[in-house]
Image 1 (cartoon, rainbow, N blue to C red):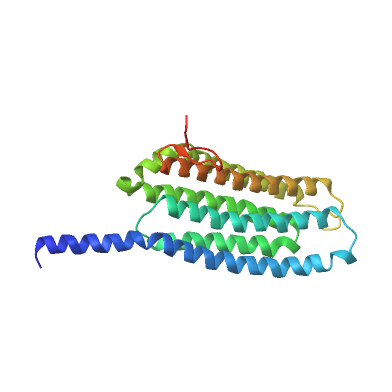
Image 2 (image 1 turned 180 degrees about the vertical axis):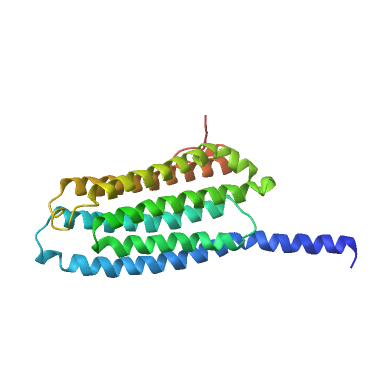
Amino acid sequence: MKEVDKQRAAAAIRARMLDSFAPTYLTLISILQGSLLGYLFIVSDGFLGNLKDQSMTSLGLARILFIGADLVVNIATWNEYRMGSTTFVWIPRLLDTLVPFGLAMIQFSLVRTIMLHPKYWFLSVAGFWVIAGFAFWHMYCRASGEPEINGAALQALSLEKRSNHLLCAGGATVNLIFAALLWDLTINQIQSSIALLISATMSTVFMVMVFVRGELSWNRVIRFSRGGQEKVPGCATRKEV
């Protein structure tokens, strides 16, 4: 085979590898998150179905918040992978498959611990933020390995790159503190615990804020892809200042 033919064949293989990135990631994460969503519905249906026969306590309200938080995590995880696989591209390797499975395993724990002692749910949330921080690090590390493709986007999202790790570290730390506060309390003791309700609310609100922040980052990607121009519905295209 001539050298030019080898180069063309290598280029074609590389192109196919890069083109497989987004479909591979989105297919994998969609299967995992869809399975987790089904499991969450089963658990939440069992709890909410019997809710009318129970007096509403802090623990009951906290478990409702746990269900809502797990739903946000489910949607946000898929959304982050959609944004990441659309913005960046690289040749997938084994670790690119293991990271989504790691997230799915800790998300399974998030759902499984809804009906257990709340300290285990907070521990699972802390574990989720640790793995999410690693997932972000892995994404930026792999994207930087293809500078000719991802360099401009990495530079445009440099603020998000730094803040993602801080948010994940903060989420893990805060939820570890919540778990420690409840560690020695029995189920009966936390039935009317205001501390539990405050902790569950703060953890859920934090997840929602991170989800909203992800959408704001996606808007930055859209503006960057348009060369700094943003299409406003009902208005003329304006130049971003």
